[in-house]
Length: 303
Image 1 (cartoon, helix red, strand yellow):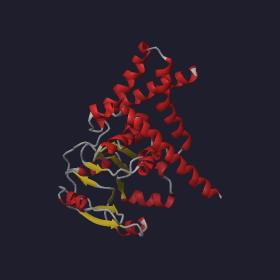
Image 2: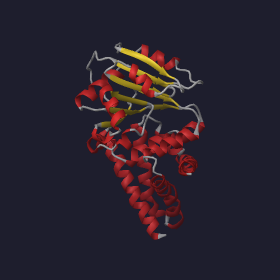
Image 3: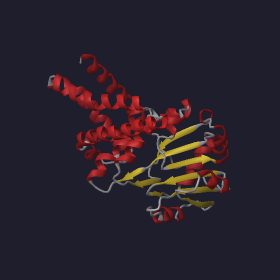
Image 4: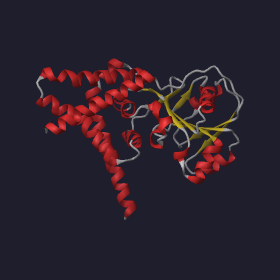
């Protein structure tokens, strides 16, 4: 039990350090004031029940007009769409998104300056009720305390760069080369907070949240399980076994971590602090569900 508590404390300090690094380095898409004329192919992933009117309207209101738009339905292969696309860049959008002015120019600037094959953006979230506020901040919470986002471009870890998929911006030539070679490890990628340039209106779907959380861990069930165990159950064990005076350190670290992540993701700090216990409970629920589905799927594939 003592070893478990020590492991939890060390992990809590590490998570706080990662969050502090992200907070200070401010990994957000900036406004650079540059304007380009490169053609961009926008590919919208569509489900039959989706309403893309808000997304299409926000694209029309963009200050960037050198675009072509494709809507991919569930029956079409992505290769069929990208073969038709003529843009120098590919912008993949899915979910109930809306885009802000300056998005495309700023993406192109960053892709050119750092020679990036992919920029993934973590959208700012719009919440539609109490339940949404309990589950949808989980993706941002895990993502912002598990790895320093500014280092993804330097260390080049594809699993982290594709951890957020609602908005992905590709260099078209490099994207097509990777489709053939399936060798993403040799291309530069980056993951950034959208900084108001992309907004996502979520739906209350624990399954999609669980898939997103597993994706952050590269679909590694073991890593996701250890993370959940340390994040959720270590504080409970500490609260039961520690004198209240010794709880100041873990409580303070958790408090500061939630505040910094809320600032980075433009979420309400007070609401996230008050709902933290419920969000932790939901983390257990969605993780168990996602891990169970993942294990059953792998088992069926092997059989």
